[in-house]
Image (cartoon, rainbow, N blue to C red):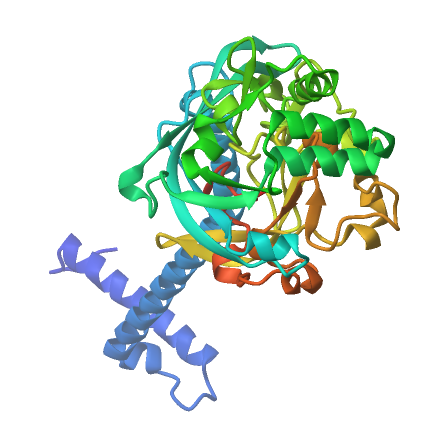
Length: 457
């Protein structure tokens, strides 16, 4: 009901005021007994500040939650998703499938490997012939580029294998060498000493016949040492005259030829050198895994010259092909894994073990070291001994006679890490880790080494 003189709008405002007073009274009744019962109504500016502070607090909480969420997502990505993506990308790029960059590099490494040779020059051959202690001096290095090429490749998708023929080529670089290759050195005669020692050990009854053949082929035989031009010894070759019709001489020439110790030059002459007969020639027919079906098998040797195992050593374990051809290794290796590689030059596999983290050219790497061990005290390696445990090569060495057909021992330079008696037996040896250890700098997640040294023989 509208009183006289009141407009409808004024009436509405009065109603709103009445409602407001009723609500205020109710609020006062509810907060009765508190120290500041009218705070809500009497101090509106403070209420606004509290509301702003509450909003800020809520914003801080939201920002904190967002940061935690981002951190958690980053951790999940870094430790879960990213490694999986990285592994996937690496796996896709390291397989030996046709058309991939790694396959092209595997077939022909686009850069040469460093191949450096040192030679021990014997300085007292006459004294040695009278029973004196050998004295040597280390000369070198001679620097060669080593090129590796794999050709006549065949893929077997079902078996996940790659078949190829390997060719090694060495090119002399006199500009990087300390020697010219024309120097004359004195060494134990490799053919005479090799033949006599092998016959003495394995066929002593034939020694008189062999001595006769040696005197004919190497007449006049004045010494067991040979003075020779370095490049003739390494690549160009030393002539061996096999024109004699004497039975002993012909038998000796035939034996050296069948063992691969010499290379035919013409109908009556042969040549001997350490590397000449292997330079730019076929180095066997290989079959390796491509790694498509199992990345851990990448590069692993399956067979060599159509043989799935060797028949060289006295035991199945030693005759197995373990590892790769040394130009590639499986990715994702750990510090507990060994870097295994098989070499036809020594007819066996060698495994380098992890030592510590390293750096090469500023990049983080892992340092792997080769240890020949002590075969006499390693029952699982007794098949590399002639008659274990009594007839095993000394600690830190390998007897390569069954493989190479001559009395040849492999070791680290200067007998580093070998039995001290070997070092004491020769004057002029000075083994030290930095110069003579055999090692590999390797990136565990990848497939490639970046620096290594190789085993001298």
